[in-house]
Image (cartoon, rainbow, N blue to C red; front, side, top):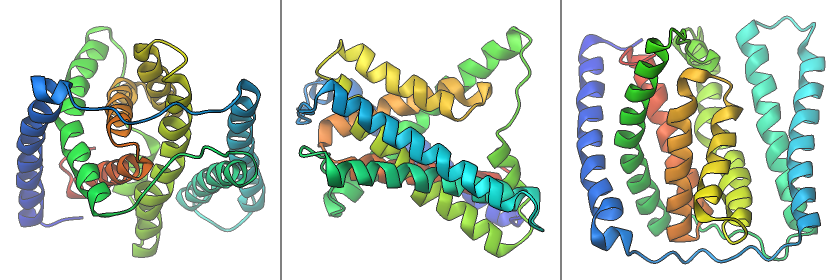
Length: 268
C-alpha cells in the first residue's frame, strides 16, 4: 500500500525506534539506577469474591456482546473481514462495558489512570523499550518453532490489514487495534489481574500469569511468546507508574507501529 520511498522511511524510523529502545531499556530497566526505581503501585483492596465477580463480568460481557454481534451479522451482506471486525469490536466493547459496570457498582479502590503529559511520555518510553525486547524474543521463539518443525502462521488480523479493500474499513480496524483493544486489555490484564496478584502471589507469578493469558488470548503460536514478553514489560511499567493510561498508550502505539509495518510491507 505504500510507495518505495514510504517503505524506506518506515524502515528507517523503525531502526531509530529500535536503537532508542535499546538505550532506554538499559537506562530504565537494566542499569543499577533503573532496577532501583520505585514501584508506587499499591495493593488492590478487594475480596476474592469481588475479584471473581470482576473477572466474570468482564468475560461474560465480552462473550455475550460478541455472540450477539455474530448472530446479527451472520446473514448480513457483509464481507468476512467486515464480519470479523464487527465481532472483534463487540468483544472489546463488551469487555470494557463489563469492567466499567464493575467499577461503577462495586470497586471502591479502582485503578488510577491519568491521561496527562507524564502519561504520554511514560507510554512512549514503554513503547520504545518493548520494541527490542519483543524483537529479540520473537527471533528466538520463531527459530525454536522452525527447529521443532512447527509451521509459523500469521494472525488473521494481520492478513485483514494487509488486504483491507477500503479506507473506511482500514480506519475502523486501526481504531479498534490502537484505541479500543488497548483500553479493554490493559484494564483487564494490568489494572485488573496483575494488580490483584501482585501482593498475593510471588512477584514472578504476578508478572507471568497475566502475560501468559494475554499471549494466549491472541490464539497464535507464532506470536505467543513475544506477546508474553510484551505483557511482562507492560506490567513492569504499570507497577512503576501506578497509572493504567501509561500501558494503554504504550499498547496503542505498539499496535499502531505494527499496522504501519504491515501496510508498508516491512513485516507481516
